[in-house]
Amino acid sequence: MEQTKFRVVELLHHLSNKEETVRHKAGMALATFAYNNTSQQYAVKNAGGISLTAFEEFLGSENELYQAHAAFQIIILARVIDSDQVTLTARGVELLVRLLSSEQHSTQILAASLSASLGHTRAGVPAALITAGT
Image (cartoon, rainbow, N blue to C red; front, top):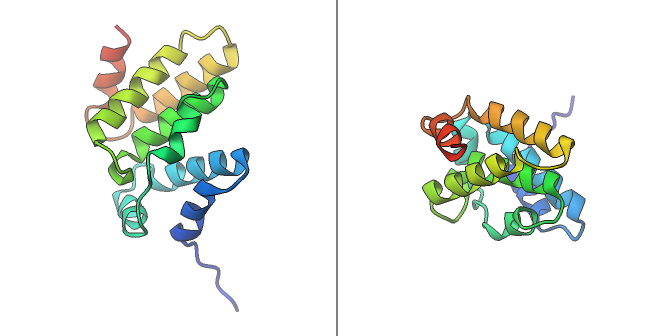
């Protein structure tokens, strides 16, 4: 029986795909893969890590849902992105908190859901969410 093996390198490759939706989904897959799993984060790091440029287009997108997902991704993947972890986390938290005040209900719901998920990650993130909201 043939066994399928997940390879982080293949997923990292999709971050530079020509199609926006593929890049977006690759980022979410990597964040989900690395969520609360330090060994998986090291696997991503050992596979070459990630450039912040992979997320910039989504962080600055007019699409608020893309912004929310990208904010979540840079917080979860901060350890494996080629930028300062504290700065990345703060940037992501500030963006998610701002999106909680969006005029779009779907954005508010997504930002709240992602923020709630982040409350169960590394130390300091829940406090940052509270502080950024005041």
